[in-house]
Structure formats: structure tokens, C-alpha cells
Image 1 (cartoon, one colour):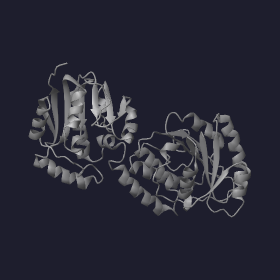
Image 2 (tube, one colour; image 1 turned 90 degrees about the vertical axis):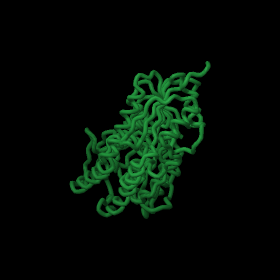
Image 3 (cartoon, one colour; image 1 turned 180 degrees about the horizontal axis):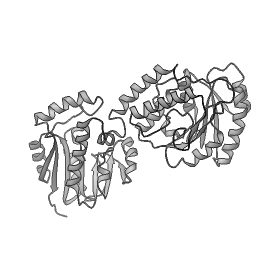
Image 4 (cartoon, helix red, strand yellow; image 1 turned 30 degrees about the vertical axis):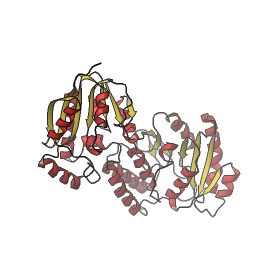
Length: 423
């Protein structure tokens, strides 16, 4: 199944009579080999289910209440590689599906956007103002480079939403879904769209009525956006509104790129969404978390889903290996260091960044960090290193200590060289 079309409907029989035949013609012209239309009924008392069935749609009755319950039921029932969602009231022009379908290779989520250049919305003034305020509140408050996160006219690659944990039950589900997609590193593209008023019946949307639901969702999404679960956590910290966090990221970036300058083939193990990938020329990123790698695609560098315990590279493949803010998150042992040594050429550079627990300054900063940035990396350090012990350990594994620099006298970034070994 190439595409599933999901339409939430509540007493929309008269609109479905017009919408479903138009949808059929548009989808046939797309060239999609197989598609299905799913009408999710929210308890209609008119002829919605009969008309939908007669016109070839599959009717699914939602178990959970509200618009959020309708989308969840539709996602679960969908069999397509892509899932298209639109309203039943004809405010979403089916002819626009062609533009969304054409853009599907550019992102995993395509949004028909009213608030990007060349987009527009025909709606009562009060509702339009409230909609604009809602979108600004979410996008500015959560630092999202998006404009219309309340549009329900979207095309998803099904893998983005099929296993998504959705909590919202009202129209705030639209914001939650898009923010969760962003947090997982999926690309989102907004296509300019002209929104039309519903043709028949009354709207089921009331921004004021659902105001508290939006606030609850904003609070939950704020926690997600500021946690390490968000794909762009490291990248966002580089431009953080919190001065110490911004300074820390930029100082770390400066030291590491300075140590790695001139390398011909570098590997960043546990690269995350760090801008180190953009700061060096010939560099490959490796990380165990797919959401981080999805985000890092923007840097245009080779990326590999891999563990530091088992790097999928040939011996002596790199002249520089970087591992920043990784080793403190794994159990102590030689395996990670042996693996990094294996893929490093004789004389090559190994750059390790980790907090220095031998310094009181780090312990104080860690306590403050925990308070300032809830959901961050504080209290997640399994192994606590100090400089003397780490240098001694690395020298025992065949490395030569070359230099160390500190971020605020607390996070140490050490430079080692691999001692020559027989070829």
C-alpha cells in the first residue's frame, strides 16, 4: 500500500459526498499504485458512515475521544507507506495533494502551511488572530523553525507516526505530533497552502475552548524540547538562551576543532547533533541513536549508526578520532578505547572530552546544571574520570599524552597520539 488517506469525520456526510469523489480523481492522477481512504468516525448521528462506505472508503470507529483519538485510530488502521491527513469539511483542497506528494522526497513530514510566504487563510478575523498567536506561542516558545504547526493537512512517512506515543486528545494533538517528529530528527517541510473556509456545517475547532489543553501540551513539549531525548539537543545548546550553556558548547567546539585541525580523515564517535561535524572538512559521524543521526543529515557528512564498542570501520581508517561527552556515559573498561585505537593510524590523534571529577569546580557546576537544565545530562555519568587516572590508563593502552585544555576549568579535553605499532 503506497498511501493511506485518513479523514477524521463527525457528522460530515454532506461534505464527504463531495470530497471522496474528488479525492479519488486526485489520487488516481498521482500515479500512486495502491491507496486506501480511511474515514474515522467520531460518533456521527447523520449518514457519515453510510456515505463513506458507499463511496469506497473504509470506516473506522475511534475508541478514544476527540480529534486526537481520531488521528490515533487512523494511524493504527493505516497500511500505507505514506499517511495523508486532511479534514472532511473541504477546507483542505484535494488538488493540493499533488504538491505535497511531489515534495515527499525532501522531508519525512510535509505540511500544507498557511503561514509561510505565498500561503494564506480565509477565516474569520478573530479565529485567524487566535491561530496566529497559538502558532507563535508554540514555535517561539519551543524554538522551532516552523510557521504552521496547527495545520491538519499533512503527508507523513508512516514510520514517523506509527509507533509514536500520543497523549493529546483534542486539536492540540497536531502540535504534539509535529514536535515529536522534530524531536526524533525527522525532516519537516512546509509547502505554501491557501486555506478555505468549511463549505457546510459548523467548525469543531474552538481555540478558547481547548485553551487549557494547549497549555498542558505546551508544558509537556517544553520538557521534551529541553531534554536529551530531543534530536537537536547539542545543536540547539550552541545557540542556547542560557549564557553558560551557550559558552560551554562553543568553547568545547573551539578546542576540539583546534585539536583536530589539519586531519585528513576524522571520525566523531558519539557525534550526536554536535556542530563538530560542520566544523571539520573530511569527517564521519557515528552514533548509536538514530534520531541524532537523522538530525545530523543537515551537515552533509557521512553518518553511521554504530556503537563505540564495535566500530564498523577498517583498521587504521582515520588519522583523527574524536569522542566528546561519551565515555562517562558507559561502564568502565578497555573495549571502547581499544576500538578507537584500532581504527586510528599510527601517530594519529585521539581527542577525548569528559568532565574532570578530580576538580571541585566540576562537581559544583554539575549540581547547578541539574537545576538550570532539567532533563539534561546531569546525574547520568556512569563512570567518573579525573585527568591523572585517565592519562595513566590511556598510556597503558598505547597512547602518548600530548595536551589538555579545559572548559571553565571543569571539562577536560585531552589530546593523545597513537604510539607506532608494527604494521
